[in-house]
Length: 277
Ligand code: SAM
Image (cartoon, rainbow, N blue to C red; front, side, top):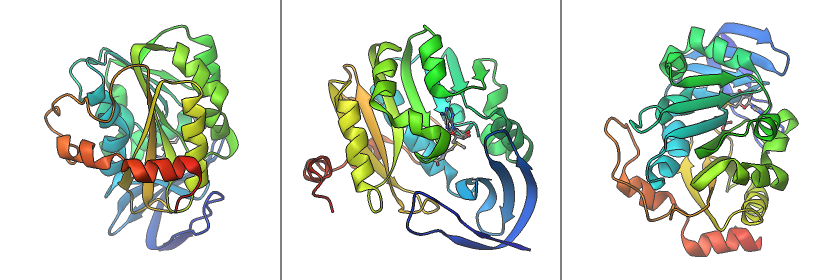
């Protein structure tokens, strides 16, 4: 049996997981990649000592980073996921019958390979013929690839190290030009409990580049800070109110969840003013 003391450089706490079995460990070009088994959480992906997903609760995160923007868009056909090498976001994107192509851009291709081997319930959709994998950084991909997408999902690690570039204003400016006229972008933007200042920064940087910016949240038990936010920006669709009827087969997301996930306006105003909590 093994213990994991999370070493999260972006959080004032770290969880301690006991009774673990280490199933796989390697040092990729970018990070330490580990797969653990836990009696309660099931299989877990850990990158550089930080838990990225557990089989028990990953669907809350992956449904909530994907389905609010995908349902707010009238007919998403071309979708881009940056980060998300575990395949969970791609799995949720492909549930939408309108999707023709799902491009996955993760700087570290080993994440997809390892999760496909050890947690197929998360990564199996990566084998879908509609998926195009690009093992490179998200910023360089947006710079080089001239395609336009209906929805862009930024499912990255914390804003430290290689992921830092995915939270810059210049990145959102480039993303704006890679989105269709009714395009929508969403990013995980950390926890309101621990990172309210960071959420404010992401909201400001998105507002420098998009006419519509909003924020919604979801409780994620296994992320330090728990009150996890998703910052969303739109070129035209009303992301807060304009969602289509939910597609079939989802475990958690529905129209009520969509509506209740968006931050109350007063709270969002406080976050943006820097007066939260
Ligand atoms: N759900 C997790 C979370 O919210 O912390 C993130 C899941 S996913 C495993 C995060 C992915 O971001 C990793 O596979 C990592 O390789 C990728 N990543 C980090 N920086 C990146 C960058 N600049 N471009 C593309 N992918 C990046």
